[in-house]
Image 1: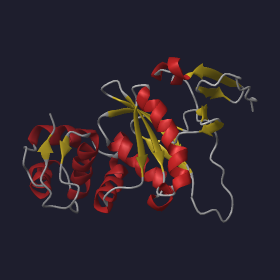
Image 2: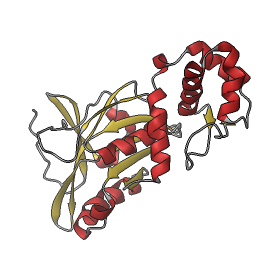
Image 3: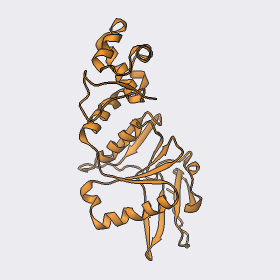
Length: 246
């Protein structure tokens, strides 16, 4: 592991890892999305017997590869990012940053860096709601937010979302891999299913081309890909109305 040599200057800086033996320092004022090209997570996710936060890795359809997470709450935010059509890049543990705040040197590793279709970047820190209310935790998360916001990047502290939305997105994520569905049925669904069709009617339209257990995955795959949308605040089912996205 490469040792970090911190500068004596008070200005904020970040360190980005490109491999086990390569770390580069970037001054914060020069930091751009391009600096993360080819980078790897700052640290590995430790796993030990009896731990409660359950780290792991998730195959992201956005990235086409595994993305690590430290907790089940981070996995939930990762699922939502992977489902969001506006997100075109996801990096976990993207960098290590250092800044002098009120005379004290503070250090931080953000949880996620999301690249958006608009060209903007969003830095996300994930904290359970009860911990996010702790004054010390709020202070630890505030100074990175101030830096990134002043830099023109978006910043978010995320503590959860509506349970039904997450449940539906988690279910749809089972169809995020293109190779688990029949591509011919996906093409048929694009052609035959109409804006405003209920899911059950969409299945009926496709019934001449396959059994229900083959047809429904194709439809759910298109929901995941953002070809259609539906009300995810209600349980997914045959009455779910499909709306074609622009």
